[in-house]
Length: 72
Image (cartoon, rainbow, N blue to C red; front, side):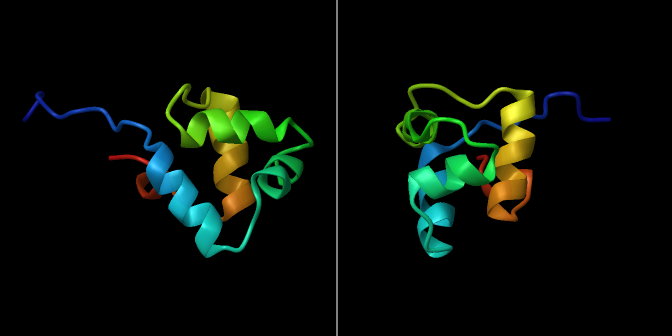
């Protein structure tokens, strides 16, 4: 068994691409997540921070995508 597998790394660039492909603003994504600040989405897209576990689940639901689509 290969134990040297890398853990997926969050990609702000992929997040931005998915959001834009869905025609959503950062504020709209934030509102779909439960009315968090759009500033969080901006931080994530610019790789200043990555979403925590709870926010990642909410983000994936808000965008209708899978974890593999926002990770490298």
